[in-house]
Length: 102
Image 1 (cartoon, one colour):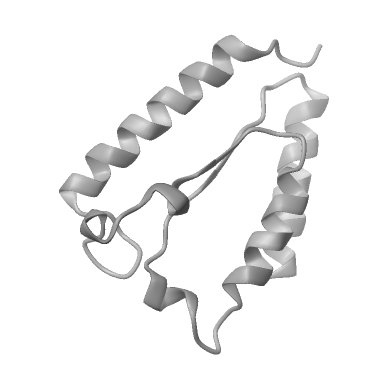
Image 2 (tube, one colour):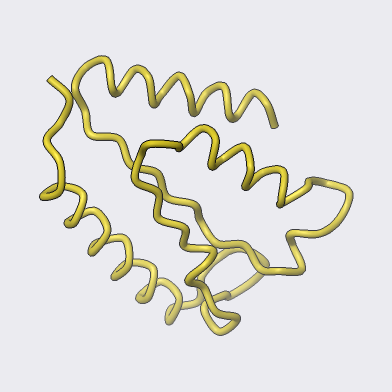
């Protein structure tokens, strides 16, 4: 959805303007939810990579396993634990990796 990416760009640029550290997290989606008339997942990923270029991006979709899902897009308890750990490690690395923009 172009409006969602425009909003993402606006949030990214506004955060940068006030000196906030900006990171992105791509949430996982089950493979069967990536196909169909509703959206083109490959086009979504291409646009996401364009919007996030130059910023840290944690792609949880690349890390997720089938057992991590409770339904088409929501994590199971095991998935919540795995994602929570990945997010915590990613954020910690980013907080210590680079200073905020002045």
